[in-house]
Image 1 (cartoon, rainbow, N blue to C red):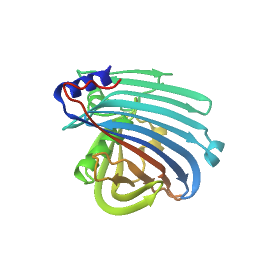
Image 2: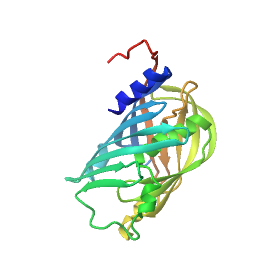
Image 3: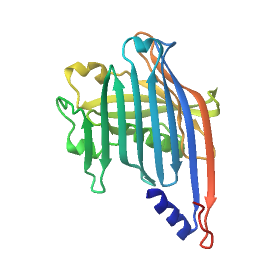
Image 4: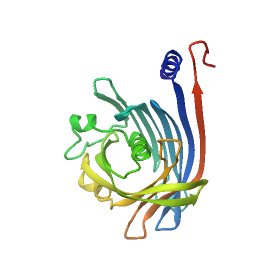
Length: 266
């Protein structure tokens, strides 16, 4: 339905429809070099909307401790003020268990959610309704950071995040432009510092989630788009660090214009 509304608007106002479609895969490494998993991301980003899906699957030595498979998706709208998320879904299989999180942001800002099985505790303190309303879901904040960096070419901003239970802040700072060649992408990247600040929804046993050291995230800077997808994310750890880096990069750029006497192709 949303796609039909967008097509109708394009037809009526005869403005160009700009869309970028990205198919990205990443390899994850722990201890500096040990393969621990793979991430696949498909993102469809236009001038006024986005759909993004991601999957994570553990492999290698990590499977000896906890086999993990995550499927997540998010969608929403984009305007001059930024990203406005609408729907987020996560399906998490881990250690022979499963949790499903489904969240929707209504027009009035109220977030409705279905979580199965429900959490036994919501943290001390739990995330407040105000914090939930002021946040985006994790995937939408990846899109928001990529768009902000693509528009401004600067590392700045705080991104309140709520994933169904945990509320935290992602903060970008500093910034260095450098050349990058790997995983199918060759071009400029913006290297940002990435800070994680735990706020609410946590318990004492979540100490590992509370104390994530400052890391880096590198964004691909392309001249003909304002979307700058990450090519590398790293977090320093005492045992050598964890890194996710680009393994393959595919992009399709679509530029279509409809006029009042031209019907859109189904």
